[in-house]
Image (tube, rainbow, N blue to C red; front, top):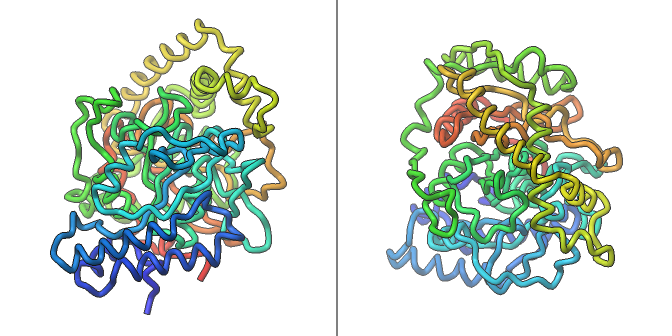
Length: 462
């Protein structure tokens, strides 16, 4: 019999509703895997074992009494250590904030708890969420579970969330994405990630890196679970002005409509240079697979290169990060990551003029891209240019976010779904980029692909 820890949430929901599975047993299985695997994988900052077991017992009694608060009552989740829970330690990945206690609870956490979900603990992040490799000098770098012989990059900044979901220590988790920080760990860990549109999910109570670009999002086993979690997390919040006036969407009714008749654009030829051959092979096979499912594959001419958009995105990110974190990074007595401190400090050199020019350029390019992709339902790219590299080989002066940052810059949404493996057994990933607030469409395409392939069902550790 398959362990409950290996089942996606949409299957767990059915099992709990049919009384074939108890939240107590599910939480116990997850905690047992955390106890066995996390000393090596280092995904969790904290584990709330005692509280989680009490919550599971309460959920089990409520469900048996007919008082479930919803279909997700009793489902475990893990939360990135960038998201605040009042009274709990919220380090934001920084040793300088080891003793920092959250003064509030994030709106998204309140939504999770209102749905009856059980927080198993906080997961590691790159310091201040500023980095795509997933490394953390002082608090430790989680280990990518797909290579037992070598410490490979987990992807960041939501590194612990990606590793925890991939290793089946938790069925799903929360990440945040400012330049790829949901999609990168999803890609390198062989799971699914959803970068949401700004305003879809409240950022209140999420420690800011770049308020113009920050977006919380689901890290899950598959597109169906991402749709379920999106349904819970989204919604207006008066404490986050970006959410005001944004209408909720239900991604479930369209999830299984397939891709027949959709127009999907392939990666422009000029963007293929620099992408690893095995990653490109997986990507090309994915495009052909979607074509075989009925999608029309088209070419598109884009008004700017992804790398150039990413550079401007980085300028905005750095300026806003320094505005938020100057007091911390300019205090040389504090133990900050040697790779992160200069990234944030670089924002001090960006003048208000350059910052405002970057914001204006963003609006101009958003309009240009909207015109270029008119009549196209989604643009398909690899999520990353390589599979996960060894941690020892990482050049911290570079970024893995070449194919992801531009999505944040243009305020689009995107799903990252596993689409193959390299010869050495490392996952590759397909990025499905859609217009702003078209998350149901991105998930629909991802679901259609996953319904025809089993890459997302493979697990790195028994």
